[in-house]
Length: 233
Image (cartoon, rainbow, N blue to C red; front, side, top):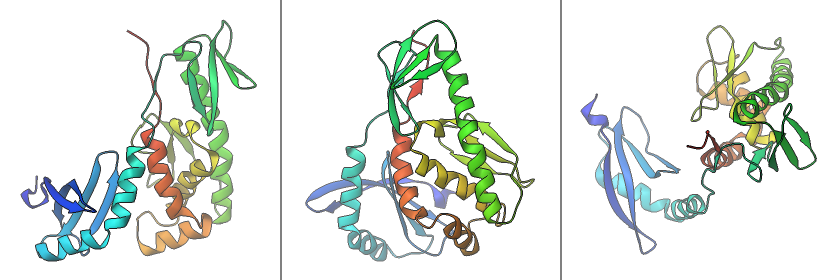
């Protein structure tokens, strides 16, 4: 591990509040701030003066406090075991699970399930059915054929595009609203043209999904609330 990139905890007063934040120096050119479920993180170039770092954080005070409050109010993941009465996010809506023998099927605002394993398989199939045509749509916008699409079980990585053009998407996208899932698909399809995160990549992404920046922020909050599906002990 590069010791210069080691993280440390710090405190700063913002808006009359003591805010703890993680601090890391990296080989980068600019200062950066990220806020997620773990709180505030500040990244700085290796030789950035401390006064510049602290000044940068203070300039972002109002935004930082607003985002921290937003995360503090974000829903926490529910642990679901496939029992009757449990409520599950499905394509941005909420359905109530009802335990019943037979194949998984939706009836209005209820999802009939015989157990957790069949439910997960059904969700994976629903995710693939919904995401595959969206990948083909965005690829066509770039003048490319529909990419090979695979599902992953990742919880912290929504998608990835490999060098051979295969796109892997988390089946957990089935829980979030279609507009946000579309952003993930557009992001990975943009990598078919630019397998990087260069300015050129973001121009391609913007041509496919103009409101990508706002969607990325909303997606972070949505990800923090993903349900945890596990058999009860």
